[in-house]
Length: 74
Image (cartoon, rainbow, N blue to C red; front, side):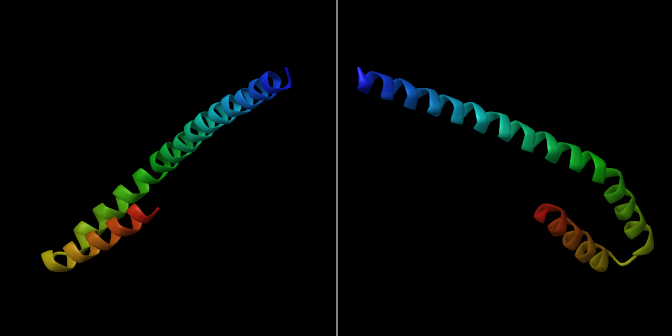
């Protein structure tokens, strides 16, 4: 009797942990998407200004690559 109760309790705890993990992952994903949507117009405007201000292709490539790395790090 005790073993069945223990197994059932353990099973419910594992199920609760799985549900919590899924909900937490969804919340994190939603926050990240909202953050990307919030920053995207600013990043696009910054890129437009960089392209207009930098006629040298080599410097432009270095600048855009650096910007891309910073965005990926976030």
